[in-house]
Length: 126
Image (cartoon, rainbow, N blue to C red; front, side):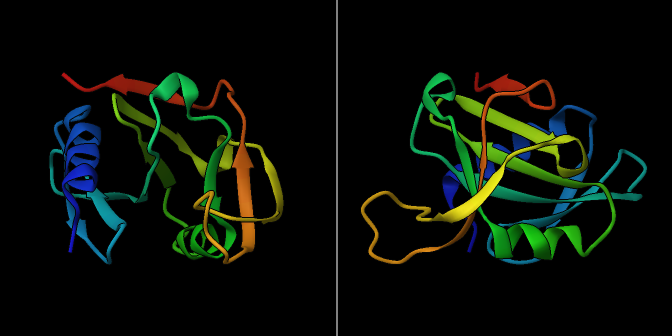
């Protein structure tokens, strides 16, 4: 089931190029261009911050690996309270370390951390 926040994020993203999407799983999507051609796969990650306070952006390494295996322009979209931050994985750089995706969680996993960089693009919600 897609959350309201994920829905807003993916709708905002595909509006950029008048595209569309199809949900593959809870947070993974097939991305189509305006001619309905499959052009990418994307994951929507939720950040409970404003865009300027969202760094480092965090995503589970296992989740990211699954997206990369699709091999077709993998994109990560972080949905913040005031807009989206997105980038192509092939253009991003970051750190992988043991950590938590939710600050107060007791569960830890291998996580990817991304600081602010030129590969990221930003769209504010209207």
